[in-house]
Image (cartoon, rainbow, N blue to C red; front, side, top):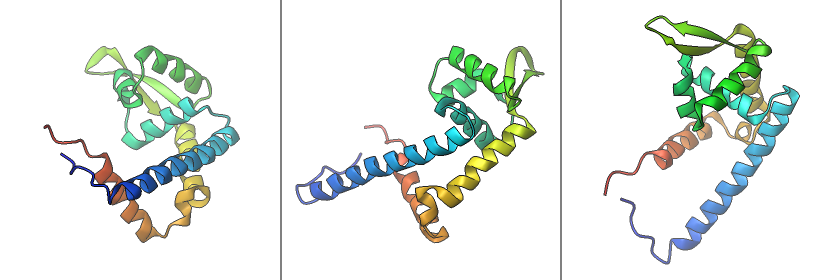
Length: 149
């Protein structure tokens, strides 16, 4: 459980939250720009991002969980990306009722362009590699699940 906030740390928390909102907006603007260049919506870009992060074919239901959306939304998004040749559906050999989604070579190339743009044009690109590693560790700490009360 997090320590109760004392009045002397509230101004710092206020600053941190303000910077988090500002950073989120800056990442959002960068993301919108690169996705527009690639003619992708945020939702389509998120599918490519999630599939690339896993690095293997993913059951559609699992992808819906990762995207925190209804499986029917994944079907719609998969249709759009499949039409563009960026992903493919595969049968799950262990359960033929399950459809797996995987990046195609073209889909991986588009995701790589997003990663390269992040490395060169995003707000994160302004940080040194050491600062990027520090920020990654700090964000990991912030995003850990809270232990049960």
